[in-house]
Amino acid sequence: MTKRALITGITGQDGSYLAEFLLHQGYEVVGMLRRSSTVNFERIAHVQEQLTLVPGDLLDEVSLIGILREHQPTEVYNLAAQSFVQTSWGQPVLTGETTALGVTRLLDAIRIAAPEARFYQASSSEMFGKVHEVPQSERTPFYPRSPYGVAKVYGHWITVNYRESYGLHASSGMLFNHESPRRGLEFVTRKVSHGVARIVCGLDDKLLLGNLESQRDWGFAGDYVRAMWLMLQQDKASDYVVATGETHSVRQLCELAFAHVDLDWAEHVVVDERFLRPAEVDLLVGDATLARTELGWEQTVDFPALVAMMVDADVELVRRTGR
Ligand code: NDP
Ligand code: GDR
Image 1: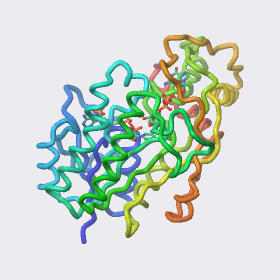
Image 2: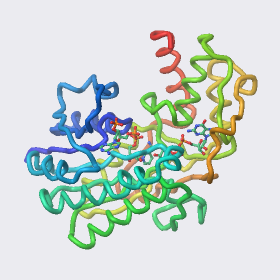
Image 3: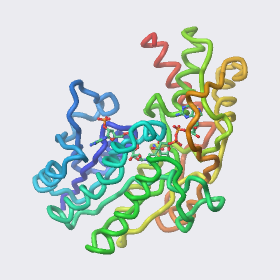
């Protein structure tokens, strides 16, 4: 049988790594794009010829039903979202429409047009928020701390509900932060690696950041898309935490990233309250025992290697483009 995957959010960080991975596994890959006035294929340009790109939007269920009817995917990966936590305070309703209700629209479209398709929901460690226990596992209760986190809790539970109500093969991956040289520039790891590169190249002297004390469990995006795929290869759909099990502060991230190019972070990083959040998630660290034992998932890139990879890529980018 032809293995055909539909990816929503294919232009995003994870969408591009997942598309590469699935093409390598012999899948036909259909990528859903929302309409924009300019092309934003930067992350998928290198595989674009091998993809089928179709227009659609999580805000429009008709478009989702049409795509599913026409392409009949065997697997659907819902990676599309308003994914930036800070923006979710400024655009809480849009975040809810996309990141929460968008999941229902897609699940319902699957129920109507492709009920045999297996479904992956991109859930998040942000659901644990003000954490009830350390480390966080599949059994840890949720306490989201942002409109984004609240929307992801809804997306998680509607996935569980459609599995239990309609027997869909629907799984939710509770993924902790994962990064790469393709990470959006507004997220802290990339902001730091890109900022370091600009400072090394003499384009900037200071890097303005928010809370340096928050701690995150940071892994490599290329490793995490493999976990998504593994979930859909199981006979039974279920929910899994995916994480490295190590946590580091933003301060430690800065220390490592600046030291990689022989700079002292303290001479360049300035705290700017514009980047502080109305409510913070102080500490995340995941327990991925279930993913390791049931899925056989393993990470291949540790935190120092991830930071080095991102700084090297940004130094090369800034040198090449001059910005
Ligand atoms: P990105 O922000 O890089 O990508 C988000 C994608 O969603 C983009 O392709 C964007 O399209 C698309 N999108 C946004 N709104 C809509 C819409 N209304 N209809 C269709 N597509 C839309 O996110 P990541 O790749 O980092 O993350 C992928 C998913 O995983 C997201 O759901 C995120 O919330 C979740 N997640 C991410 C984690 C991480 O650490 N990266 C951890 C846990 C969960 P466009 O290019 O047009 O903007
Ligand atoms: P996060 O990622 O909110 O965890 O969500 P982000 O990189 O934005 O923030 C991580 C931590 O760094 C602190 N921080 C800053 N963050 C940003 N963006 N910019 C700054 O200048 C800055 N200074 C300090 C933040 O306060 C925070 O504590 C990401 C997203 O990919 C979500 O979609 C995903 O669900 C979660 O990871 C898991």
